[in-house]
Structures are given as C-alpha cells and as structure tokens.
Amino acid sequence: MLSLNRLRFHYEHVLRQDLLCKYNYANIFQIPQLSKMLIVAQVSSESVKQVTLAFEIVCGQKIVKTEFSQLRSSRVNKWVSLRAKTKQPTYLVRTCLRAESMYNLIDKLVTLLCFHDFAIQIQANAIQLTIKPILLRLFPEIQNHFELFENAQSVQIILVTSAQTEQETRLLWTGLYQKEVKQYV
Image 1 (cartoon, one colour):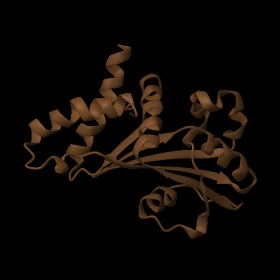
Image 2 (image 1 turned 60 degrees about the vertical axis):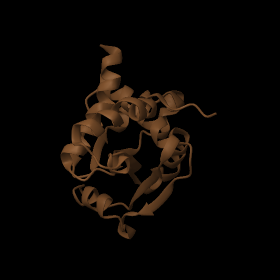
Image 3 (image 1 turned 30 degrees about the vertical axis):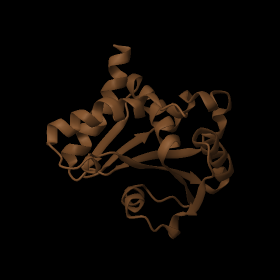
C-alpha cells in the first residue's frame, strides 16, 4: 500500500474532520480540498532550457514552455499583466501538479515557508505564493545546481482548491500551514 504524504495524512485525518464539524456539511464531498497546483516562472529566452530543467527536477514531470504572447489561462494572465514588459522575448515555464506529486511539493514548500517570508494572497478558491528565485536554492533536489534557477525572474505558485468561499480557502491553508509550524515551534 502506498503511504500518504504527511500533509495529506493531516488533511485526511484531522483537517477534514475539523472542517466537517465547523461548517456542518451535508455531504463529505462538499469539504474543500486542494485540487491542483500551478507553477509558473517568467524567464528570458536565453534561460528557458536551464529553468525548464530545474523545474523538471523539482516537480518530477515535464514542463510546458509558452511564449508570453500565447497565454490563455485567466489566472496566469492576471499575474503576468502585472509584470513589467521587457524588450527581449519572455517565456513562461509552467506546469500543473495534482494528487501525490502536488502534496509532495506542498510539503517542501510549507517547510520552507516556516523559515522565510513569502508573499501569500488568498482569493476566492486560490492561494497564490510568490517566491524569489534565490530562495528556490533551498529545495534539496537542486541545491548543488542552483545556477539553473538564477535566470528565473519570478516564480508564482497557485494552489487551486474546491472551496466555495475565501474563508474556506483560508481555513484550509492555515490548517495545512499550522501543522508544519507546530512541528518546529
């Protein structure tokens, strides 16, 4: 049998029951959960290959490269439109994680969040984390190969949940985050 990731175990055995009691859901399928994780990095045309390789090492799956002008996702477009436009061609390196690979990466991220400041925004059913590329060197898989990430201009991680309200999303995030914080306090 496949063992559960520790954050997924915490969600299934503790957080899910807490949310069920707090909101009195009629159906267990109404309880909010993490649906997917979108990871997007803005890179210059010269460094696309290096950043793609670094993300493949961290995420464990193939990465999609998109030219700046070919974007279709509304979540990513909102973030990209806020970025300053450069004179050279800019690419987005992105991937979507689900299930175990998502929980494994969230586990690493939450551990990093305990010790460093990240910009976190919670909107409706999404949690957005903005990470400075210099902090990505803390991932154990790429500590010896950080030069691959040096050219990433910014990294945006969007956790999409099945929550109906911002309050449900906030409770889900704090439940996962506090599990890790309590461990180190």
